[in-house]
Length: 329
Length: 279
Image 1 (tube, each protein chain N blue to C red):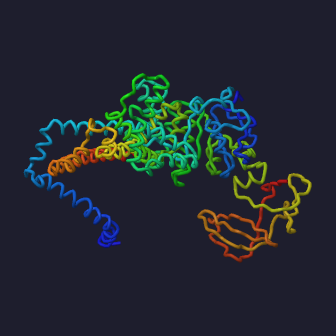
Image 2: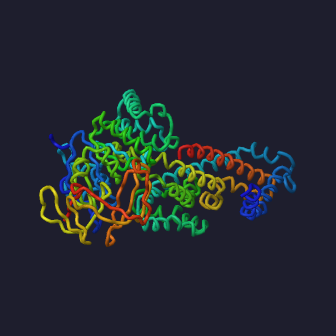
């Protein structure tokens, strides 16, 4: 791969004694869509603010195209940014908002008009050019915010939970639009979200953060199939955690003696239990099952094909493929 | 809640204040209005008082001077208050409290005392002239009193809190907006005049209204610092009532002042209404 567009080397940010970002190193390459994923307080937004220049790192180096930007104010970094609640200028029309960065750069008004029209067309907002932000729906404001961040063709686009304020259906729709827009324009994007579904859907690579640390970075598939820690596994999908001791690997399968006496291995990975709770979710039924000795696991079962829901108290057998198990120290 | 019981509740809440206003404000005002038309004891009835006001170049001059002083004081107050209010939006809560005390402190002192203090500072043999002469900046004392300069200086100091407070009250500009402008390439100056200034205009209008309207009717400060050379409308009214006992003319002058104030208030409301369109 070529030189990375953005390089973070051993970047830390402390507020007093609290560590917001801890010794973080990250490369983002030209044209990539990288997502910082983590729970709130994990340091993902702080990392974005450090790159934008609204915060200064306590230590470490931030480079854009190889040149250190730590001493540059935000307005000199050639970065586009979409804020969580859009931060559109209420006293300017859609056109005025999108033209703002171009007028700041003193482009001739004919070129301003041309480029604003182009980018509004790309986000399907041409009809609303004369409207004011308060006259737009959340999704429309979001599109204007994206158009405004892209119109001056910044070398890097930062997005801070840009879909957080939208309802679920609109959010999914906007995910698709963002992804295709990013692909068409090829703009390098660093995206922040706490929604793992969104991260997996949009990203080329996902960086998982927890308590200021970058825990693991990789493609969505790599992370999903090979989570490095139980935190990553737990954050990306729903997992059942059983404490126990793993034997030496025998072939492809590790035999695990679970603390409460259950054993998991090829051929012997069925456990008796009782349904504690059943939740109908449409295509799936989610069960909370209590195994012997009080271990709780959650299990999904397709509804179609069975058309039955086991009531609480029902005795069941729970099964799991040994290859789906991950052993964490 | 039915419309009727809502009205009853509103009536109970607003009623006492409304009654007080009727008794101590609207009734005397109506009485003044009648006086201005009947001419009061010994005066001629009809529009005579108004005619005398309009025909005398003295009264027209007074009206113009009063307006001019008020406009000047408003402008100086806005220019002086804006940076203070701006700083108050940028500093921490403790510093805001300290600054707020300094802004409010003058309001706890009587206008009369503050105006006499200005006389001590501004007179020919006053503190300011003595210091300037001692520093050899000037040879002859500056004429800072008994002219419009003195009146504007004094009134500005008295009315400054009424400009700072509404400006500070309208501070709630979303802090993400300047950040968004900054990341798009806007430097500090551009961020100020493209965002902070236009978004603070409602506060500016409120401050201007409060200072200007109070300035129109100001009495003590112009009377003491302006003396007989800077006669304002309020001073004319006082002279007519106290010295000349011409209640008709005084009432007519008061009505002119009231009309002028009403025009200004309605005008500013139009302006504020425009601002509300994108607030």
